Length: 504
Image (cartoon, rainbow, N blue to C red; front, side, top):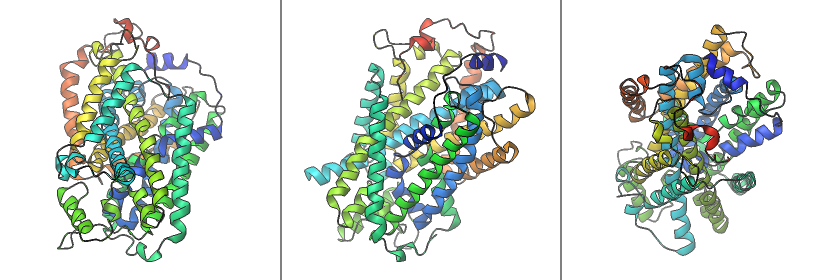
């Protein structure tokens, strides 16, 4: 622990960010994925109660973010929660967190790719009047063969990462502006004409449905850790980090509530789609897909829960077809950047674990021409592409969330352990009321985790069991820290400064 923290504390970063810059960083990182992709999934699980689901997920993120910030300010190195846990809890638990982060980033990238597929298919239908057969835009679990658009975007992003294409701050700012402008326009057009009767019953599936939707749309908040990881570059972090975290999460939550209110109040409504016996159908199943097709074939409006491009669909229904197409275009432009950044985050975790000796060093070999970790990028891209090809967005988001919630749980636990084990260590940022905030974060993560579908709950221990086999069979005996190798990595290509990083 001391070696890792000492190395981190020597790396003095220039403090230039204020509260406003941190808030904008958080808004840009959070808005764009879940709100465009998972609104229909949340409507199917909770109906209008999805508004409460956004509040629950946002609160859990807020308390987890405060814990995240303390460790981020103390250990400002690559690897995210994996490195923090390594510094505090030791190698085994760090391995489990890193293994869970693989589940978060790679599967999360697949989920966004599938969400992008829905929007691009809608754009092709609306602008070019071409209907792509459903069998080629859905995986087997949704009644199709393969999701070809999701495959294409996943492979394209993998190729961009291999050749080292970067996102500049200017391009990123433009994408943030597009996302915020699109959602603001949606709110301005949909909220004034919403029908209050659509909000009753408010929780048609009960509190369990609201909790299940909160667990799924937790995905809509992933990215807020971009604020906490900037703690070491922040002026007056004790003041500005909590302001940036809470302000960005409050802003995004209010934004999400207004968007969901506009969607619920539209003629589509947000009541879950049911079968002939009145039972709520599960998202992403062939049964729901068949029921949705039957509704459309009857001449009725496609319900919000059925739409693969929910926000654009709402605007088309209320008479703003061209603007609805623009909303779809905004999502089509913005979501690939999220796929790219999630895959990039995955390669950084892999890279750090390989640098520590826990994974084969060759896995993070740097390309001689492009100076990128091409092997791990290709492995990640292929895995993400396979998942995007055959699984629906809701299931992918749930699997990703299980890994994320475990990582956040361990970060909150690590903060409390380090407060007891080393209370005198320098902390540029200290979690306020840590003995209240950290337990709340742990309880909130556990609550959302056990609110996930059973398959998603079981994915994490199954994934963890595979990880333990790899750790005890390979990683434990090759760990650089375990063998007393701290700063000396045999393969010079694994030194982080030799790799050409992508700029978020």
